[in-house]
Amino acid sequence: MKREDLVLTPQGIRFRNRIFPCSIGRSGVTSAKAEGDKATPIGVHRVTGLWYRADRLARPAGWARPIGPRDLWCDESDHAAYNHHCLAPLAASHEKMRRADPLYDVVLTTDWNWPDAVAGRGSAIFLHQWRRPGYGTEGCIAFARQDLLWILRHIGPGTKVIVPGPARLA
Image (cartoon, rainbow, N blue to C red):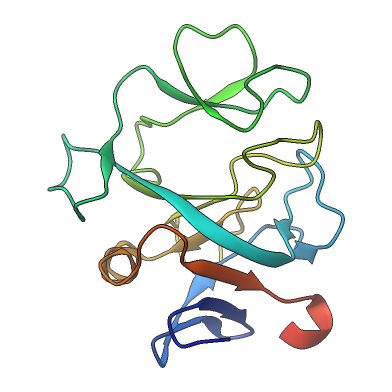
């Protein structure tokens, strides 16, 4: 592990010799990730993209892509677009990237089960803003807004997000 990696620890994410408090999936971490299990997948994941709400904040980095009103993320396991960005209208189950709340004002996507998604193995494992400290996610890793903005200014596509097994988190 390098100081440029984002590494989950019991105290939060370690990055560049700092610890950032974070929230993970309500069900903890798992090596057997399944769609809807509310767990954060164990493994080494890579950052694949940066999305942001241009109507709410300035472009946070040169590689950031604005979230538009039609941007969605498909979470229907048997759909051809499963665990991929897509555009509305979409009849399949999906998450809206442009949310009313601030959770997805800034979103880092990862390569969990992407680009060749396996049906039912989990989708939309993102790094995003938390609701509040300690509030579990659906499987993502979530941060205070100011910490997320600091982190994304120091990373780029391909940055590793390392989620060790539960024994290493204890």
